[in-house]
Image 1 (cartoon, one colour):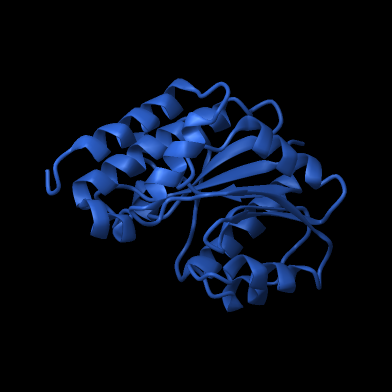
Image 2 (image 1 turned 90 degrees about the vertical axis):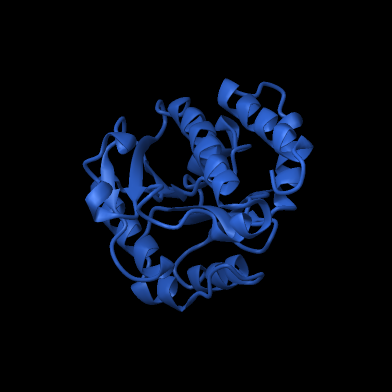
Length: 224
């Protein structure tokens, strides 16, 4: 059976979207980024269905049946903080698939090769972790059960998030470190991601659209 790949998503209009980014570029532009980035990530995942089984991990229970999240099976993230929700999705999909990858939608420059490397890492390690450049992580992968306490004691959205998660995971099995990736949380991150998108040898159309959107945003007058 192929590993499950859970894409953690929020539904615009039902949950706040990219609030830290919105503080820098405005709520409307932050929502536009979210949608463009989501389309880019989905396009990459669509190219990976030969070796993973994609799922939407949806934040809102009332959105599970909406057309927005069609195309992949849906799983509810559940209630509580991010640690509780990571635990719920991971444990659910581990039971049904035997191995799980979890990503968000903040890194539209990810590639098929990066996701394939994560799957291959599980051939040798119990877990794989893709650190983000801000100290968080853009991908988690595993094939062993993780105690709820591991997920819920990690402080998220901090510079030491990935390091602390890894230190807890090592107690339960070896952790393979994957390539670092920049994810977008704040306005300046857009320029880094723009550079990483422009460096792709074969960007997908949705990734090119994301690049064009960032270029357009940067040419707009302040407050436009």
